Amino acid sequence: MKNISKLIKEFKKAREGLIVLIDQFPKDKRKETLFDKWSLKDIIIHLTGWAEHQQETLKALKTKRESISPQNLKNLINTDLVSKKARTDWTTLYNKFVKISGQLIAEYEDLPKELWKKKIWKDKDTTPVEYVKIEINHYKNTHGTQIEKVLKRFWTCLAGRQARPE
Image (tube, rainbow, N blue to C red; front, side, top):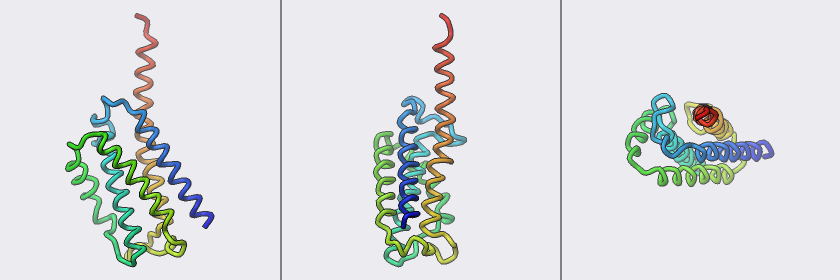
């Protein structure tokens, strides 16, 4: 159980770090395509969609139901959901991400000890232990790193402008 507590703590820390980065992002840049083909707003929609899926997956595991495998949802979440929610205002999307990602952590905290090493899907070896590690990486290394790189570019540009003599 100690390792599980450590994982949950790490997930909370990754989430908090990501929210700090998101909060530093310039308001006027949130809709710009700065991350390959996505904006920060698109990333928030994407992360919320996956957090909702993970919540449903954990609920299904608790009630001995099988949930939909992520392989079958990639286009639905990564493309369809992002384009469907693109017109939703920033505050609504941001608040939903904060709420849903917090609820996801609560689902992990509430997951019975005996389910942490149970296979989630019949055709895959993924357990909640692996799934939370995937999400930690998703928050911290995938999107956290992307956002941090873009923020550093903004800060460098801003510092360069301020350092120029008039």
